[in-house]
Length: 168
Image (cartoon, rainbow, N blue to C red; front, side, top):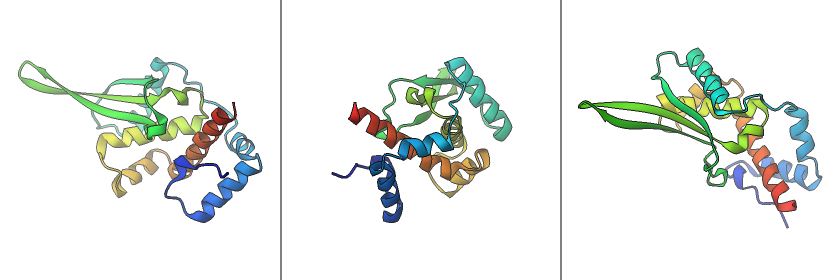
């Protein structure tokens, strides 16, 4: 039976065939380990806030401040929520104040460093662009130059994690 490639929907058949060859040959883990040997050092919510805030200050200086950045164990990667960006409006003395929060799925606490960068770039880009349009992806590439390759490899990583769960 062929391995379902849930995270790779929309990719061309020849790419999916290459991925299946890696999986069937038992080489997907090796491929990912070779490309991304080091996990990141961002272990807790405080470090994650500092990491994302530094990226925001470098690439989106004029964007509104972030109130909270945390790892969220409730985000379901299976439902394609790698992270979320929300603006929570509250009424303060007759004025609406927006509080911006970024939540990143806790499965990425142990991911390779470039994957955390890609997810943070994606969520930061949502501060300026709500939709996944051309301007949004241009902003993602501005923040993380290898954004598209990292997104693809992150999808391979998620496929690998699913495969590990299924095998255990």
